[in-house]
Image (cartoon, rainbow, N blue to C red):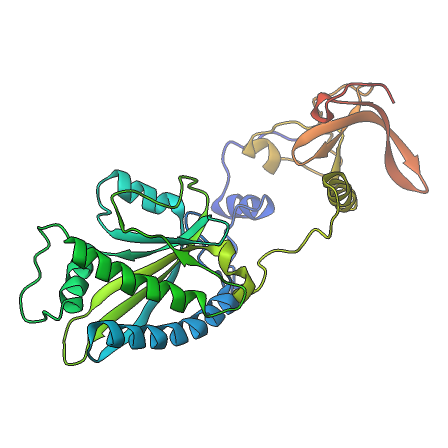
Length: 327
């Protein structure tokens, strides 16, 4: 290195150096639109499928209105308040923490497999029982147990609601269980299962407050009315699918960098560099160059040339590729 090292650098030279090494922050004017995505929440159905399901639930609410008017002998109005997606683990956690004190009427297919339930909070259960008995004047007492008659009437009503839900599509054929469950989760314990929760508000005409109820059903049971969420493998074996995936991976382009050697200099030394100076690198001339992929040295070799371009003749692969063999 020629010249005497400078004992100090001006502000202008420091600024030039920072620009040269890319330390000056660059203004990013790119407008990026990002959608918030929470991996802890279920995303089984996309937006279009949820809209289709919402349209169907409007007819369910209307049919439920007729059932309440029939069983409770009055004018009612049922509305859909929300359609949400959850992992089953969400409900299992609430149940284990004692937060879930609802009553359930499970329903399933003709094969006897439980795939959903109608849930009723404590206040809803006793409000409906009271209305089924024709007693709408007294206050609801949630501290007592349901009588046998109340439970029977309530089960008849909820079974009719299950039939309404089952009737939204010909492919559905759900049958309600013959008992009401409290404090015992009827949908298994596989926390990774994804559930669709359809919440309803049931309000008697003239009343300012309504009662809440909801349908919880395995998302996969609704695929026939929302459309498939995944592509059918078409009968291909796992080996065939793996081969196709590997074929796509092998066609992906990867940047590989050839590195001869490197060295470290101080700012003063860099600013003192002049044309025709010689910078010593950290390798001898007989040591190999490195080929680097994603920050890892994967091959080593010696400098060469091919068709007028620099080249590296590979002599061995490093352990980054699980081998160390001569080429």
